[in-house]
Image (tube, rainbow, N blue to C red):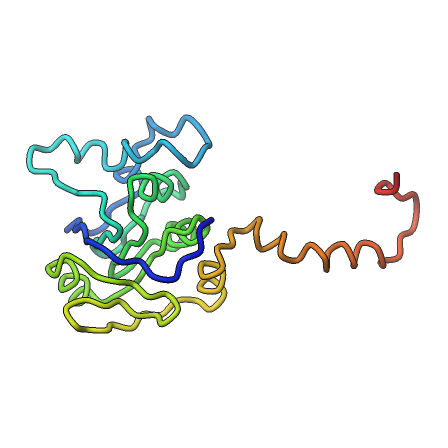
Length: 186
């Protein structure tokens, strides 16, 4: 997973609330477990609408309760594969939010007013270390769990977190007392 410090660039605006994971990534495309190749199917049904225009900019601004519905990981995978690096919304479904942070897709909660202002501006910068979204000369603070922030700044997914403790795990395993046969010795 890539470490995140700042995300800078154009903003795409999806002016819809309660967007569920089936609308983000329809069920007919959930036939593989690789994280890549899903971007072309993001908002598949809506993309057929004649006035649909959602460019793959680094920042997506969406409405409240983004990512509600089922817990499919394919939705954040598709959004990231499409080109989004951060999603800014007034609120997220809990599981969707967690799934985003596990792959390095940064979810940011801002007020609806600030979301609309960022969308109108059309470009911005998200500074994870400073916990600020910057646009139009403004610096809007946001909150994020300390551990999630650390993992994203260091580029650590769940496997990376475990591997970062490899020496301690090996030390524990070497020193702990065992009763019965040992299956790890060669």
